[in-house]
Each structure stands twice: as structure tokens, then as C-alpha cells.
Length: 460
Image (cartoon, rainbow, N blue to C red; front, side, top):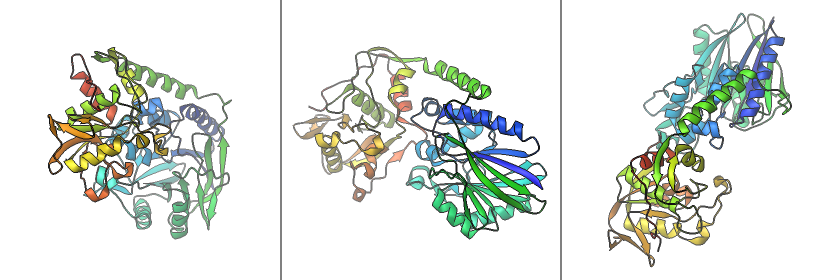
């Protein structure tokens, strides 16, 4: 019998300090089990837009830290796909060479996301272990990114057979689908995958969960635990023995190698952020209960980028402070703009635009703190290329024509019906730059100006 140990994490969501300690634990376990094959996998969502290093690198920092911590491969999670799109996944795979698994996500023409794989084979002592990775589906994958999800059951069965044909002795599943889906897979495919390492639902399973002879293991969230699964390989069958989770205590010393990589990434990011990207002629204030300079800046940047007639921009979801007058460092801008929204443009009738702005200037609605905004109020809708005066919208000195179609810039926050500024019945078809987020768009706009001045008085 050959002993196999598989270590696993899931849903780290940018907890870098915890990951530095996990790196130390992984090294310790490998040193203590030199008679066993030890593999370490992360089952998705290591990234987090609210974490500085993860956000500023679109998740690449997390993968540099994972591979330094000894990780052998990862599943692509929804945290990166939903917020930054497939291009960010490709960039991560280019930066870190370990397998990025996403078997069930493809473009509508059947192409895999560049840099991703469906499966991988790892040598674990005498065992050639096949690994399949699947991820969760999020709303609007198709419309935003031209991605579609392949049904899981037949896909996993097919890939397990392909792995055997390619020389794998056994296959396991890394699933960022959540515990409920994992239980369904275990019940349906007991002869294909004896072990499922899970994520997405953030379950802590101290002893795993058995569905027949299939073991499901999941290690909670936020780098608070490292999962460990022991398996036996008898030359014919891979058999899970037990699952445990190891607490990652704050008193644990960090891995020197992982901490050194944190410091290295910090230095690289600091150099990038230290650049002066422009100069502001005056203070741009931030407010959610009135017109503010930072809201008008964003509207101007969006209109300029899309070459649109008008732009709409709501500051609360995208900014949390204003900007001082004088030279503007990239770090100052990026630190106050954590938004992952994408610039976009749509053809909107005058009547529809008037309804959007009326909703956006409702004081009660502007004060709303939607749970997805993490405590921020929406703020008033700001305009570029138009002014709101005495309850009317004025464009080029003329009242808005309700029948005419206008080219309007904004972001998915302003255009998507879920945020309640537009109506599904309008059937708007915004075109988004899925690979660009708002701070990048504003950064580029600032760099086109010699000295940036922002007009006020648009919401008279």
C-alpha cells in the first residue's frame, strides 16, 4: 500500500497572512511525511478585490504566493472570472505555470479560456493521479464574457475516462461548485471519482462528508484551516481513508519563503503605484448626498473613453474618497477606487435616459446601502455631456429628445437592471470592456490631460 496525502485550501479570498502560515504548514507536513507522496491543491477563490495586493494585481499576487507555499495546481474560481473576466485568468496562468483547471467553462465557440486546462496528471509516488477541475456558474457569464458552462455529470465521466486512457491510474475531482452539487456528483459518479475536494460554499468539514464510498472534503474559508486527506493506493484502487482539517492559528510563524514573496510583490507594486499620472487643478470631493467632483471625473472619463454623447456615473459603488489638488500618484487614485465594474456604452432613448437619471437623483434611492456595496451608499447619478436643471435634462443647450437614441457611456452598475437604474423591458445591449476596470479607465483619462479640471454645477 502506498500512502498519499492531499492538502487543500479553498475560498482564501485574499487572506495573505493566513496563506503565509499555510505555507509553513505545507512545508512541515511534507518534511514529516517523507515516506508519502504529498500534493497540495487550491480549490478556487484565492483572489479578493477588497485585498490590496490581490486587487492591484487582479489576483496574480495570490497565485505567486500559492506556488511559493507549495501549491501544485488550482481550480479557477468565480471570484476572478466574475469580477475581471477570462483575460485575467489567462494573465494569471501566464504568470504562474501550475495547472489552472476549468474543465466546464468555455467560450461559446468551444474554445477553452487560454491558459486553462480541463485536467492534469500528477506523479504521487507510483501513482499517476489524474485531476479534473470544475467551477461554478455566475449570472451573465454568457453576455459579459461569451462563456458557457458545460453540464457537469457527463463531462466528469468523460474526462475521467480520458485520464485513464492517457495513463492515469485514478482520478479525483476539484470542484468549485459548492457542497450540494458535490454531493450530487458523488452520488451519480461513484465509480469515476473516489474523492472530491470542494469549495465555493465555504463549508468546514472537520472529518469530510461521505456519500457512499466517495469522500468529499472542504476546508472552510479565509485561510483559517488547511485540509488534509489521506488515501491508500494498492496498485489497482485509490481509496480515501480519512479527512481532517488543521487550524491555522495566528500564533503560527509564517513561511519565510512566502513572506519573502509578499515583500517582493509589495515592492514591485509600490514601484508601479508611485508614478505621477497627472495633475489636478483643484480638489475633487467625494459625496453621496450631493454632486461631487469625483463623480463628475468618472463621468467625464467614461464619456471620453467611449466617445459618447453623454455619460452617467454613480460614485458610491466605485469610490470611497475624493482626490486632493496637485500632482496625482497612481496609488492615490487606485486606493480610493476599489471597484471592479467595467466601462460600457449603450444606445439609449431620451425617455429611457430621463428615467435613469430621475431614479439616480432620487435622494432616498441615492442613500440606499445595498448589501453588495459593503456599506457604501449609492450616491447621486452624475452626468457628463448633459446637465440636470429644473427637472429637465439639457444636452448641447437643448432639452433631451425623448424619441431620439443617444450614445451613453457608463458601467455595468449603471446599465444592468439588477441595480434598478434600467429596466429589463428596455432590452438594452450595452457593450462592455470586460478586460478593463474603472480605475484603469480613469487612470488612462487622467494621463491624457495636461492639468485636469472638472466642471461642477451639472446637477443644478
